[in-house]
Length: 280
Image (tube, rainbow, N blue to C red; front, side):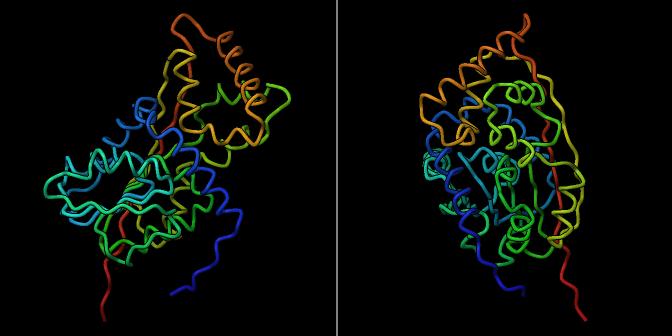
């Protein structure tokens, strides 16, 4: 087995920043990202039929992906891992008391999961993979947790989404390069996801994207950005952040039409299986 490699302090800092941001917004999360909940439900419907008694939810958040899996497969045991304490509190309050389903939660990141190798029939990761700073390592960590023949199901943000918003913030001066660059660091394509899975020793079953055109109010859009990615704006003071956000809002209002702010969102779905163990 490959020796474990130390996780750099930069990676720890990244995880901590993401975890802190999502803990702060956990109570507002589901109201702001209802489309993600629907995406997780579609992800669960595309998992191959089977008996999945032991399920690992990586970046489990408030538990909407777990809920979708429970609704379809009724597993006996669910393990949820997430670095954000606030998210786990929401998860426990919502799903911790479901009769017949044993729930175990752990506050940790994907590379440090305290789970035994080859102990899960299904690993799900819904709208968390794009936040992992080392995506090949994340895929390997999840693959190690799968039993031979087990399935992994991933939903994340795909390349090409949010371009209208990116165009706006690319021209808000002084340019916030961290915020602009966050999209390139997070969004991924079908070939990139295929590479993560194959390099982790998994056999892709299906990888695809959905592009949705949406219209919403500027207020609702900015609330969504605050909840899911406010921690990426940077280390400015509260006053500097407020000034920056005000400039963005003003530009979005200027560009909005009769139906509000128009944007495109791309979701990337991936289903893969761990090969069965060979004998001989």
